[in-house]
Image 1: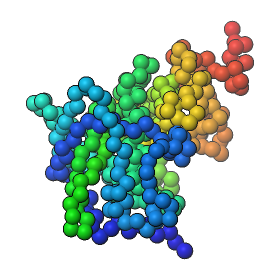
Image 2 (image 1 turned 180 degrees about the vertical axis):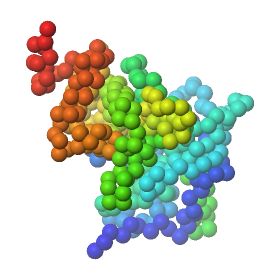
Image 3 (image 1 turned 60 degrees about the horizontal axis):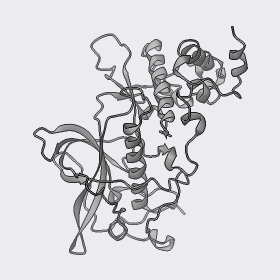
Length: 365
């Protein structure tokens, strides 16, 4: 028997997050990250019991089991903002958080700024197809984890690669009215504001040579593609050094700007940006705590340490053909050596003593 999600409820309105929609928001403290399939300790949410959740209409679920109401720090001024949607951003099936470009006018300011709002509205979350219909919990997982990851990277004193993480403009909440069975209820919705990146994802830049082939980006110069990969791996390990693992390294989550499809000048080293932190692991809050080898050292781990044997399977359409799995790891390893050992080793910690390359490198004059 096929899986059937619980009904959304006859009173659920159409999703409102389209150009012209206005949110009156105020700053909000996100909950400490929790759950995420065991990555964090369990939270203290009051969710519907298992025997009810599969049949509970989503409208009732959202109203009766709202997101956690955290406390704003005493004595700290709390900003408000008027957020006006100007554009919808749709990636994939658009079944979880909603992304919109918006104009943000903070109370007391004279001019708005442009940002991307990521809105965690459980009323428009599609339940996962694994018997898990806890849409409010899922939205809280996403919000608490992503807001905490961005805030941690923004506040860290550990050096980061400039521009690698989108600028972060804080976590916010706003209220909406929901009419159910003729009665109006107020509900709260969480969001974060981040930089609007004018670029393209690596997945966007990959196209198939013919209908039956896998998409690739080999129509771009190989040196350009390898420069992007080098920046990506360097930025990734620097985030790990700060205690944040983005945990979803994939072409759809890597942006480069300017968009090479719109570039008027010859391609040069672009800005590489890692996006989407909703399943990121912030180690100081995780079930297992900080990772000493990555975080207790003066320098970040060398990308060779992390990718020597794991490869870059998700990026083969961006990598040279010689890096395909059938060719083995040696072509990738040769590039890792050249890029991060022979030329840039001083940026990173020495390899772990157990790494297969360590003895070889130690024996060199």
